[in-house]
Length: 419
Image 1 (spheres, rainbow, N blue to C red):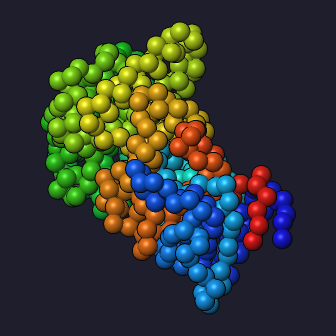
Image 2: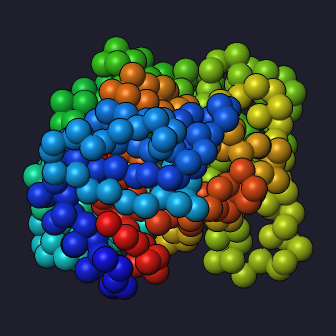
């Protein structure tokens, strides 16, 4: 039967449908099982529980003997990839903060708006109150909240709270401490790991009213050493070239942004970054958003974007590893189309961009054995697109279904769908 429903009703209907079915199938779709491999045309994916049990050409997949309840969705004209990762988010929008005070409907609407709607099945929160993030994770695990898998660093480590968040933290009654000594740094890392942090974040450079304040090198080294002792990766917010250098000197693993202070990255700095296996989350759209907030001219905005895009281009050309991330939660620019376009402008191909969304973060964060690819036995995390992004990279932003652990967590109500 065919019907047209609101987004909320479609999601409610589909989730209820799946609750009664123990298997889910997409048929007649274009399927990219992993970046760099030719897609399966007219393909089928069969999911049982939270795992993929079959993937192949539709003509070769027989489900008539499948005795369990089966929900089947027509993928004609659609493209399916492994579920997207966003490696740079914040759980800071007011509807998510102090989650204990909000109704489930409020929390669910924000999850849909920020994450599910854009195909994200895993997100890495890199600076939010850890206790609140843990509460959101518990709600998702209990089924009270529909959202992605959330990994987190908890509260960051900085010498001074960045000037651009001070007012926000005060208005929302959030305390994020500064770290002034190596011993304090080690103690805080251990405490956050015990409380559930999946990684740690430092602000190598904090933007303040009078310039950029660097985290003392001994503190940065103590954070990284203790995090690595606890088998945790470390993210760094660099702000400037000096911040990148401090990140390298202290041994961090991931840069949370390109740096637009102090100019372009030199060939020697790029060689050092790549040799250190330092991954990069470009967050290129952020610089457009910040320029708009500062009422920059069109010319100044373009110059800033060319610097940011140029740094990604040079990092990629040097052989650096790129992770997709948008800094949403700090910004409210949730639409991912511009980020994909800017990454392409930096010279990244569709397979490279898809890798930054899937295989690269899954491997970098220790989930490569179960996530990031479409294959038998892998977690059933899928992003279903309205068109093939091989021809138009912005198709990666046009999501019609998001499937997390075998459950549809987003469905676009604008499509006429058939079961």
